[in-house]
Every structure is written in structure tokens, then in C-alpha cells.
Image (cartoon, rainbow over all chains, first blue to last red; front, side, top):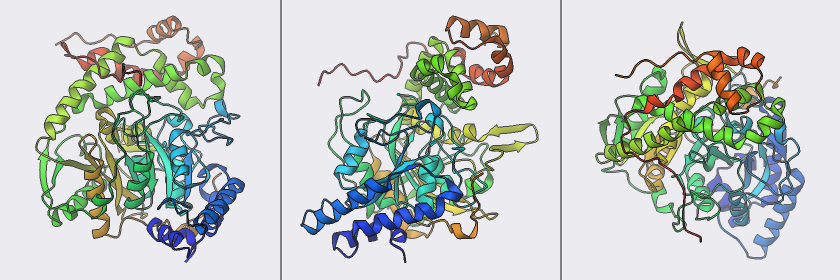
Length: 472
Length: 65
């Protein structure tokens, strides 16, 4: 077994006991990147030299008795939206082709302080405004999209190049690639983790968090990224969380909401069945399934897109005026449309969000968490990224993927996606998401960890050697 | 039941984008109108009615530290 194949827990334990050097692990990670990149193109930049230098320093530090904890010496992929000092940070856009930040984003600073080693920057759908990540392919089938916008991070974890990569989630951009690539993806409660130094798509919907191979490292990395930071106006002043007890916690008596609307509409039957089978697994461990109706379902997409379009167009307005030709046409169209969203429409979407929050609070009186498909189906064809629901009903993949994820962005509730099945045709991963009450990430982590322990769906590396073909 | 909203024509979009000084030229608006239209239809403010006295969900924090 190569070091990159070790689970996070195995690698961390071997590093702690000095059976494995961070240098060996990082070299193995870099080797896997070289092996898989021709087929998937997950990385915008590989930071080989600095990664090896940091790995050597970590090895020396540990040898000197200064082990920092389970993240020490673990390779990390960082979405190219996150600032990294001295490293090109393009947001996968020609608009920022030459942007090299002076300082790390807060998340990267926190994780490197915990001992993680950045091995590269992962591709994003341009400025996170889309859910297909056209630069990158899915390790499970390289003719398919990896999801997005954190598609490079999903592909990097699924290919085995890293066990942890960072994402951001405005309309599902952590959970979508996690589901489509067969990884874990954790979006915290809005305000839990500061977003300073991460290019924004939509300030009031953006969240940062990890995509990981297993649930344990998702909990540890998310905790390490969390904490109050005044520079992020959404940051909530709470102590650093510790969800380790939830990783081995019982789900007996937990009330799991099963939606009777919205999440079962325009969703492929196989994706819905996979999520319901996952619910049955958790029920067999002692949880109770409770049917619930999603409130204000008819307003979700309008609120999500109105807020996102208006805020994104404000963020990019100067670049759109100065160098519109540097954006991809897909994103340029979205930003131009956002210029025409009226202020009253935007504010009414925010007012609608207030009502939605109240509705969800009411719904959660009867349940502890909600369980639903993460996305309407698996990775779609990269050459034609759509869901065809009927001959006259074709939905763009970005719209379809984000539709099922958007409620957790609008409500700000914590959500985790875990792989729960593989399609009968093609063996593509399907995920289910568990959404919890505000600042109750421990609840969703507990459900996900219990599901992981009871099945063999979580923690797989894509068998790429069987399906490798170069990205054109 | 409110009256149905008027169709979102190319002229209306061009007027709004012009007021916004967006620098999107008429040829591009004509070329992209079918992509703009569904996004803007979705955002029409009457989609969200009734809202009554409901305030917006915002994230301003008046604390200095």
C-alpha cells in the first residue's frame, strides 16, 4: 500500500508514532498528483517545492518531540479561491491570472499552523460561479463533470491525491462535488468559520469548509478552520468547537426528517432511493424517521439566485467594466444579468429569507436533522452538462445541482454530504446530505460517522487506472 | 392575485443595463437575451410577495471589536 492510500486516521497515527514521515506522505501525494493529473486536471498549481520543504520541517519538528496534533504533516489541497501567500491564486479565471497574494487566507493560516502541508491549489468553476468545473474531470469517469464549484478539490480527494481539500459553498459548492466525486463534504453553519482571504461569490451565502475522504478528518479540519474573526462581518463569536465525541456517538433516538416535497422533485429515482436507503441504515441504528414538509419550497430558487446574482455582480463590477473579455462567457452572462437585478428584488429576496428561516425553525421542532439527496443525480457528461427530465424539460447541471443544495445556504444551516451509493450503470457516486440545526454541526457529523461505520460506501478512492483518458 | 408581469423584452433589459452603466452593447444584449431572461424573471420582486413588515436577513455587526 502506498502512503497516499492510507486513510487520514492511519496516516495521522503513523506520523504521530514516527512510523511514517510527513516527507514520505507528501512525496506519495505528489506522486499520485503526477499520476492522475493528465486525466483529471484537478490542480491549478502544484506547490511541490514548498510542500517538500514544509514536510521536512514537520518531520524535524516531530522528531524533536513537537507533535502538533492529528493534522500535523497531512497534505492539503486548497481551492484556488483561497489566498495563499506567495502562491498564484487565480480563482480559475484569466481575470486573476497573475494574482499572487501577500498573505494566507485565515483558513489556510489556521490549518498550516496546525501542521497541514499545502501541496497545491485546486481548480474551481470560475470564481465559484457554477457547479461543473469545466477545467477538471471526475476520477470515477473522466467523461463526467466533477461537480463544482469546488470540483478540483472533489477530484483531488477522490483520486487519492490528498485526503483533505478545501472548498467553499454558496449554493452547494462543497456538497455537490463531494456527492458527485464520492467524498465527504462539510458546510458549517453560516458564521462558524471566517472567510477572510477567500474570493467571494455571494457574501451572505458563502461558507468555507473541507472535502475529505472520511468523516473524521472533516470534523477535525472544520473545527480547526472555525473561530471568530472580526474581519468577516458574518463571523459569530463562539469558542472553537470540538466534535470528537460525536464521531463515536450514538444515533439512537435521533429524529431524522424525511422530506415529502422539494427534495424528491426533479431528482433521479436512483438518487432519491439511495438517500432513503441511507436513512433506513441510520434508522436501523436506532434513529426515528419523521416525514416533514419543506416550507416555502416555491421561493427557494428565486431567493438563492436573486441574492447570488446581485452580490456577485457587485463584487465583480469593476472587473466586468474594465476587462469583461477575461471572464468566460458563461460567468460573464451571469454577472451581466446580475447588473439588472433591482435593489428592491434583492432586498425582497433577503426578506423572504427571513421568512424561510422562521419556517425551517418551525419544521425543526419535530426533528433533529433533515436527510435528503445531495444532488438530483450523479456526474453528468462534461461535454453536455444537463439533466434531461423530459424531451421539453432540460435543466442545466449548475441549476439542477444547486437547486437541491440551496436551502442550507439560504438558512445557513450546517450540512454534510456523504457517499451513500454508486449508480447501477457506470458505478458513479451518489451522496446524501444531512442538515442540522444552527451551530449543531456535531449532530450531522454524528449521523454521518454512524452511517460510515455501518456501511462501506465512505472512504473509497476512485479506481482510476481502469478509466484513465486525458483531459482534452 | 396580482396582474401578470409584463414580458421581459430586450428593450427593457437594455434600458436597465444602460441605467446601470454596465457597458453591455446592444448586439451582446440581443445575443444573450435568452440567457438573461430566465435569470431576471426569477428575480422579479413580486415572486416574494406577500412580505408585509418582514425585515431583510442581513449580517451587519455594529460592534467595534
